[in-house]
Image 1 (cartoon, one colour):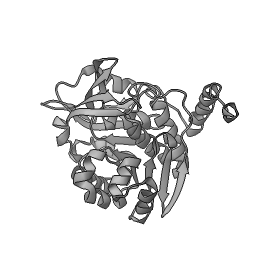
Image 2 (cartoon, helix red, strand yellow):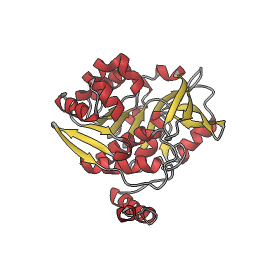
Image 3 (cartoon, helix red, strand yellow):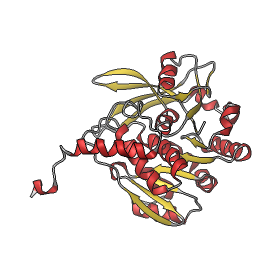
Length: 307
């Protein structure tokens, strides 16, 4: 195992075309779908007796190890999702249920040889217990991200966790709230002053900003002709980043790759855009992207068209 993602696997009730459909979701699943593009990946999560067997098979068919998904009594984590006009997911209801009880001892022994672990959004007290456990039991890289909903309660605790991990990722809105600023530029300035190893701030379709050793570098996102579903894009970015960073050791190159993976994910419902992607090397993925972008940009109007 190269990469292990830890967090929630969920049953999502999604409103599509006036009706509701049930689909597999959860930050740990989206992160794993992206991480497995470049490395052997497993998931650690807790689900309830109501978790469909088809969901297990879908994860397995994508090439992700499921030995770390523990089925227990009770109901699975679930979300009710609707969409704003810009494609942003709006979480109308949620219940963490058995997902609340995920803990370090749920990690299979054979997973402890993994080279990297990604901690998906959970309560920061829970994330702290995983970090402490992993630092004691492994020499692996640790990646961490959070969610807007956790910041009001756990802001101070999250700031303490940032220097304890190798990579901390968050989006623009979370960065502003975490730093108690009003604009992204001010948030980046504040993040640079915090103790950190590597911080990555995703900026939607504009790409991401990498903060390392107090310096900021920008990484752009490739143009996509169609954006359909933004659900899980931040999680897929985080999974792709730690997975490619494991191979390259280069933050900027990893951000470029993660931006691309997240943008491809947004071109289809759920994780369908990246489910079947798997490459033996970063170079093969880049060749795929170049070929794909050549086809897409044939339909992109040049700037001269507008003058």
